[in-house]
Image 1 (tube, helix red, strand yellow):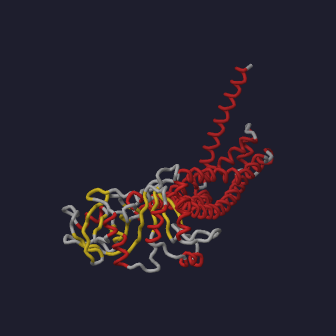
Image 2: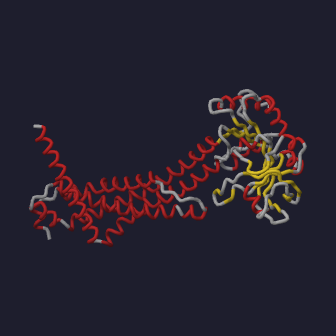
Image 3: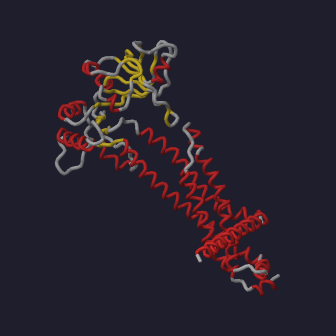
Length: 428
């Protein structure tokens, strides 16, 4: 008995495969026979899928590189700033950050003395973007000048390639020394080492004491085009204005103590800055993970918006497909009658017309996917970053095409399957 059931299942599967293959070939033949009509019909599907894929591809390109750029902090490291790491609100919401008191070096020193859990703690401030010169050359006018302390180097994952990092005596004495990013060192000293040489940053002389290992390019720019000077040197020369706020870089000892380190530092800093109990912090704490999570939350909203708009385009395309399929049923009434007369069942007719609708959608979807990937990766080309293929969205887009074809092809297929064979044969 079991052998008989197994044989029946095998026979049914073989018949189903044969019917599906025949329906597919007939669907392709019908599309080829009406090229212009088929082309105009699948255009709606093409536009809907293209709009999804091109936006998702472009956003995936940007997301991959922005996440890498946001991950500039070292492991188990968080940053404290007056300003948020990423801000997506309007200018009105940013006003509360302007009203905050700046983080000062004195507050940072107090925090460093009181905190016990951090492995390293560094302080940072950005001073200017300008031109650096040496006796051998000069840089483009977009060099970043950063004021740092020794604890910044492990927190920022900076590795010394040649020379040494900053030490406490450099900061305490506000020395005129600097450390160069790899690209900057090569521009200023293309044929020799920059170590112990004198350069000018914004017209002021500094001695090069170290060169960092390269990190490469990001978003079309060079990550290694910057110079580091002692934070105190920068504050003395560029001012300790009310609006200049330092950043505090804190590295926990390990992942297990990370959360405790964050809470200890937050509590101490609230006391130092005299934040009343119950009020929110007047500073921002963020890490690589929190910045990436914020960015993903923002891009998720954009993706949902694009998906909704594209769904409207696909809905309109589906209605167009249903109309065309109804016209096709009317035109092929006699063909349907002949097929029924020679033994075709209702399910065969249903399968044929649903398959035609699905094939129509999938052809449009496939073309939309290809054009979307090419268009989305144009952003990668202009930003000089690696191209990406959003496989998940490609699969989703083609799956949606099949669903649209099945939904909007079912009614015409049902109508075709239920035509009276005798009346169909009489149809002219």
